[in-house]
Each structure stands twice: as structure tokens, then as C-alpha cells.
Length: 492
Ligand code: AMP
Ligand code: MG
Image 1 (cartoon, rainbow, N blue to C red):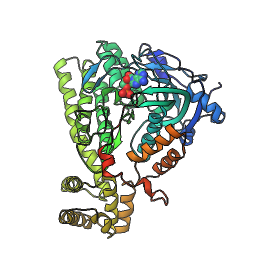
Image 2: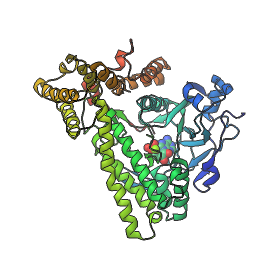
Image 3: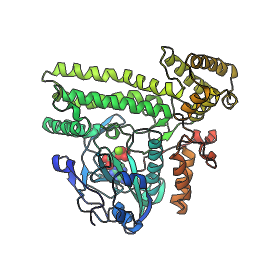
Image 4: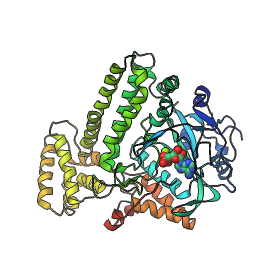
């Protein structure tokens, strides 16, 4: 196939020994289910590659295009706290890197394209349910302004896959990422005591994500700091939209600060800090409220890998790394509060704002309010329409007491109520990828070959802040018993 993308494969070229060159499995009957045209434009995908048949062949991995350099990347990782020295791309394959319209380097990779040398017992395949789920949740996150890998295409392979949850049509997802460098990529070489390779990887990461650090006195400490700052900002955004990643293993934490690996993730409905949906997370390690401390724990694992590079003196190295790791909670709190202030409609900063936000969340918890709709309805209150929120309150007195404080705080800023409400609606979404709507769309696709519900939901998720007539059903929470019994799976 002629070049559908202008590839420039720096990883394959510069990081010999960090991957295995490999080819995707051939799909017997590829059929294009989804192509993200806006993202294809960003990446400069050639027009003739967008034709359904050409796109199916390309994004199934059947025709490896000129200029691609497919590789399975090596990585390790702590899974639920237990270190596994060799994970790697067992069902993924990186096709290559593409310079996008804005001059950014982006990885283009398959998920579900067959076995690789890292597959261990797995089949290297994926089902259409989990792959379409990654499109819905990932693109939903993107529309919410949360940094994330993107979904470019999904192709049905024409071959079934077998899972505990039953048989499913097979599919390949094409994922686009700022890079696929993970904490686990560093761990792979650190665990082998290969300091030269850790340094080579760190230099590559710096060139790719933090070029301003190159040539500074402490570039590796700077890298740790930059990753920690990005993760603090990312996790704060997750928390503010009620996102639960579900499997924050160190191999699922990026250096770029993008959300990666939409496996057992889910959105919270009634506010509950202990919320867990993943069927395999029995201890609640990756519960909603544990995400910030887990991110810090993961960053400490990255710090361990970088210690030999940070300072020649081991004690000084540890002290410097610890200072960064100990900084994480403050950076996270500051990022969270920044987001909360804008969600509260506040333009100025006051010392009491953190308590105001915390007490709001306590109110949501005690009243079991839907996190998304509660924030959204607060915008109505800003305009003097209190009923939409007050009607949801079981304990009116507690709600009114908080609302009085918030109104007083707003009154201390000048500004027109309608402007405040508008600003709040531009940051407090109406539509998020609700679990029951996602499942409904996936069931129609996987079991009835009907992609219409998927497409309608995706369209709604792409306009999360707008009250689109006809899209009301996507804003509604699931019945409580549905959410109480909802379980997610890794999709492996
Ligand atoms: P994940 O839970 O998706 O982050 O995956 C953890 C590890 O398991 C990674 O090394 C994956 O490549 C590997 N893996 C997951 N599913 C499969 C599969 N179906 N076949 C082979 N390897 C897999
Ligand atoms: Mg993973």
C-alpha cells in the first residue's frame, strides 16, 4: 500500500533492544466499523486510505503500509502492587509514528492484532465490545478536555474471540498516543540493572516530551518532576469528572500524561469515594478516592528506576527524588482545586474555597447525588433556578446551608449571574459516558450487528456541554440497582 501516513519511526530507529519487530496477524474478513475522520485529518491520513475497504485492510493490519515499522514494545510493571518483570505488547503492535498537522509526533498502534513474543498465554486478540468501549470512553474523555490516547479506527476481523464472558466477534482498534512510554517501560530495563538503557530511554523521553530539559544540569530529576506534574493534573481531571480508571498498574501510566488503557474503567454516578467497578479489583486498590495516592505510588516506582541517573551520590539521589514524590499531593490538590473553582463558577481565589469544594462533595456523598448532574444543576442555581438541585436533596437543610455559603462566595465576586451560569455549563458536562448507555450500545453492536446506538451515543459524547434536543436519555443516570451491580472486565 502506498503511504497513508508520513511515517517517521524514531523509536524503532533509536531504541534498538527496546522492542521486537513483528507483524500483525491477518484478519480473514476485515470490515470497517468506525473511522474517526477528525482525527484522521489531524494525522493527515491520505484520502484513498479512508475508503471503507482500504481503511479495513489498513486498520486490520492486513496491509502493512510503506514506511511503517511495526514493533511490539517491551515493558514491565507492577500489577495490583506485584511486580512482573516482563509484560510488553502482548496484544498490541505499534505501527509507527506520524507527524500530525500541528507538528506533534504521534504513535499509531493496533490493539488486538494478534500474538507477539510478549503474549504469554494470551491470544493477542480483542473483542469488538471492549474496542468500541475504548472509542466511547476515550473519545468521551477527549471531549471533556481530559488528556487521553485517541481512537482512530475499529475494524471487525471476521473471526470470533473467546472470553470468560462468552464468545464475541473479534476486532482491532487503532490507537493514537503522544507516545506509548510508560512507567513500566523504565521498569523493564531498571529491573535488569541496565542503567545504560534506562538512560537511553530517559533521553528519548526527554527529547520527545520535555525537550526543554535536554542540556539542563539535572535532566533526569526534571523528567521525574515533569511526569509527576502531568500526572497530578491528569488525576485531578479524572476526579473532577468522576472517572475511575480501574487498573492503574504502572504499565498503564504514561510518561506523556495521557490516560491510557480503557479496560475496566467506569464513570461514577452517585458520589461515592469508595466506588470500584472492576471485577478483578477485589481489594479496592484502584477505588475512586485511591487514585491520587496510587498515582504517587506509581511515580515512586518511576523514581526508583531513575535513581542511578539523578545523582552520583546514592543518598542525594534518593533525597532529590523524594522531594518530587512528596510534592505530588500538593500539585494534585492545587490542580483539583483549580478545576473545582471553575466548576463552582469562581473566577477569583480565596482561602476558604478548598473547604467550600470539600463540603460540596461531602453533601453529594451524604445525599447520594449524581456527581455529573449535581455540578451541572449548580449552574441553574447560579441563575436563581434552585429547584433542579434542591428537588434532589433528601436533607434540604444541609443543602440550603451549603448553597447559602456558595451564593455568598459568588456574591463576593462581581459578574452577571447568566455569565456565571454559562461559564459553569462550559466546564460541568451534561453528557458523560454513562455505564448503562455504553453497555447498551456495545450489546447492540456485538450481539445484533447494530452500530446505530454506538454512533448516536458517540455523537452525544462529542458535545458533552450542550443540551442537545433528543439527547436527554444520555444525560440520565442508570437506576440505582443497575449501578450498584455494575461490574467491568479487563477485556482480555
Ligand atoms: P492490560 O491489563 O491491558 O494493561 O494488559 C496487561 C498485559 O497483558 C499486557 O502485557 C498486555 O499486552 C497483556 N495482554 C492482555 N490481554 C492479552 C491478550 N488477549 N493476549 C495477549 N496478551 C494480553
Ligand atoms: Mg495495559
